[in-house]
Amino acid sequence: MYQIKTLNKIAPAGLNVLGADYHVADTVENPDAILVRSASMHDMELPASLKAIARAGAGVNNIPVDKCAEAGIVVFNTPGANANAVKELVIAGMLISSRRVIPAIEWAKTLSGKGDEVGKLVEKGKSAFVGPEISHKRLGVIGLGAIGVLVANAAVSLGMEVYGYDPYLSVDAAWGLSSEIIHAKSLSEIYQNCDYITLHVPLTPDTKNCINAEAIASMKQDVRILNFARGGLVDEDAVLKALEEKKVAAYVTDFPSDKVIGKEGVIAIPHLGASTPESEENCAYMAARQVKDFLENGNIKNSVNFPNVDMPRTPGCCRICIIHRNLPKVLSPMTDAISQAGFNIENMHSKSKKDYAYTILDISAAACDKAIENIRSIDAVIRLWVI
Ligand SMILES: NC(=O)C1=CN([C@@H]2O[C@H](COP(=O)(O)OP(=O)(O)OC[C@H]3O[C@@H](n4cnc5c(N)ncnc54)[C@H](O)[C@@H]3O)[C@@H](O)[C@H]2O)C=CC1
Ligand SMILES: O=C(O)CCC(=O)C(=O)O
Image (cartoon, rainbow, N blue to C red; front, top):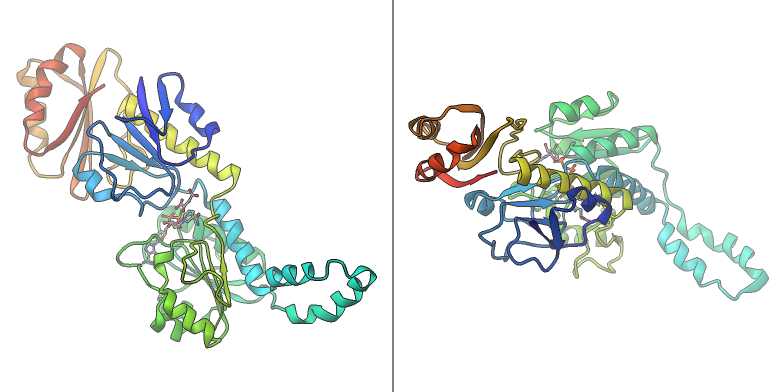
């Protein structure tokens, strides 16, 4: 029975894919795999039993990815599974930062009990809540991955002029991008031209505080900044100052902090970007499927710290899964270990990603026991198991 620990609520409809051989609970002590959404794992002790962590979502900044690689733990995420949910809230964010709908609704509530006067009071008071349309305005999208592409294309459909910036744009993302999107070659092109700026990059040491005082100084007057990516991308002191000075018209964030909550011009949403039943199910389904295929077949799909490796099982064979360092002359001692035991490799697949590599070897079941101890003793091998 495989043991799966959950650190957040994971949609049951997605978990169903695991089947009867899996025990899933938040109390599991020695898990084979962990399923997580936003819970921080940085201070968590990683049990020796743990082979995989699947992030039901996109951002992995809550997981110690490098430490996991060093311990031979494969970290997965679910690229694109919640992108539509985030896109829809970003569009809502642009609209509510423009049309003053939230304060207007609050004001309308104050009219309760005014009887027949309400209609007249509404018409008299509504001018306090005038706000601009988004059509024909310029939107800058920073990061054109799963979410950025959807946001950029939707904004084009809404009549906006869209600038996109992503120096690492993938071929797949480029295929999905509307040809009407203007290719910004620098962030300053976005800052100088755009009325709305939306962030869709991961939080990394390179992107931390990328929206800072200097960046804001080069933005247009009355710019509206949307952050549905991560709080750490924005220097909150700089944004609050710019809101006070009326340089920035609104800061919409999905990452409230004590500093920004309740401040004039801040619209703080409690991390709801991915909170739709559709996205929660998509993420859970994808995370569970990836973990199942990894635990049962050793295949890796959508890992952020190990390469994708997918090989059909060879009938009559066992599979040795080996996580190892990406160094020269590592593969030959492995294959030697098997031939010295007098067996043949029926099928193999080996791939590397930066400093690490993953190799799967299908050999006749009788060979496994004899070969594994020799392979385990190779210096570069971090972890090895047999399926
Ligand atoms: N609010 C929420 O609930 C959610 C927030 N997120 C956040 O949004 C981020 C983006 O999500 P996805 O689009 O699904 O990820 P993705 O990995 O598909 O796209 C990220 C894009 O950012 C680009 N990029 C990386 N560094 C960059 C830089 N310095 N400048 C410009 N572009 C850069 C990459 O090339 C990639 O195209 C996630 O990392 C996560 O932090 C994701 C899902 C839900
Ligand atoms: O699971 C969630 O609600 C958060 C989603 C998110 O932030 C992400 O996928 O990066």
